[in-house]
Length: 323
Image 1 (cartoon, rainbow, N blue to C red):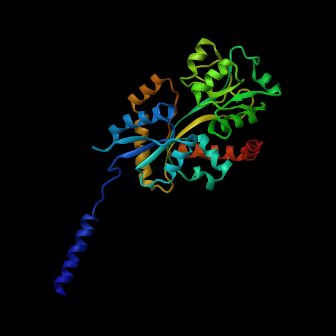
Image 2 (cartoon, rainbow, N blue to C red):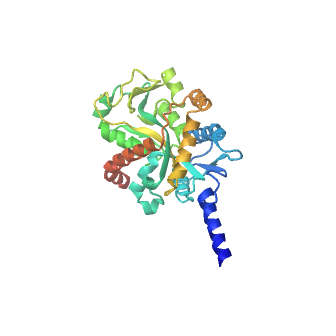
Image 3 (cartoon, helix red, strand yellow):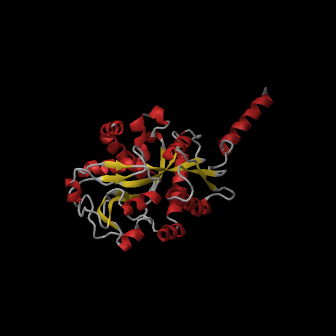
């Protein structure tokens, strides 16, 4: 008994002196970065840039790997991220417009609750604009407001861009008649130039738009950001026009629900270092993108603001979908 007692005392002293056995610090293996859209698009390009420039801030031997999980307009990848293990080894860049889907379809049918994600960082928000072709019969916001039928070119009713366009049209008092069936910006822009429809709702400083602004083939009548666009400094904002609303293509990085706070802090630090890296900044500027990164606190505020706006318009959007 005496020997056992002495052994116990020695063991307790060792714990007090050296602490409990240490565990490897997060991260100790590769981190998967989920992209819910196909390779080559804006979300994919930015995610790959973050992983490329962020790896220098990871422990030796640890990498960030982009994984494209596509389908259902981004829903498949969003559900995949939502159901992943909340250990910090699976994160993903999500589109703010996807938040509206559970409101419209119900959380059970959609398979995820946007507000329950663990929000790690903000990548940026690209303000939308109302874009017209140069020979459009409409010359101003006021003319759009007076028209009984304004057509908007969109991929489909109920997708992220439709949600953002619906809210903008409602806030501005513009008729919202949808011409759908376009498979993204690559088909939407030619459709606008052909005269298929009146309004294309797209981030104005996006590289897909800028060349047409420079040639004058596309004419913006209003921007939806908090300040005037870099590539259209003469075009007023909705706020300047008297409407207290901003609408942007929001990009945020999320982890699965219930990801531990200590892990989130490590991820936030890593992502902010990557998005403030001089080489990342140079790449983004060369790409023509205009982004505004932020940490966990800002990301959560963005999501709360979006949720409030989507709740406001959910009944009207549901009614429009049924019609």
